[in-house]
Length: 99
Image (cartoon, rainbow, N blue to C red; front, side):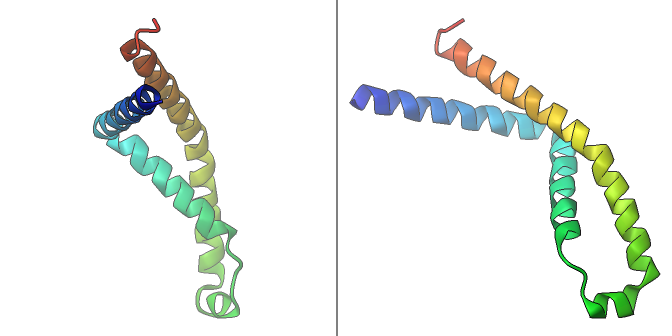
């Protein structure tokens, strides 16, 4: 079992390294994905009465613009996540001698 624990720890370290490399190689993609997630969370929150009073139509316009932006980013974020998953899996299999 100690061998299994060590192997799991090594795999975790490799995955961490791959993720850090991905962050360094693709900072704009990571930023876009983070923006999309944050915008989606913000858009899912209910409107308040004060918000409607203060922002009114401006809020509605910004909401629509943000919604369009998120809809454009989501497919790219999904593609990026799939590529990351594939690359990380390939790297782990290669390093584990499974290729």
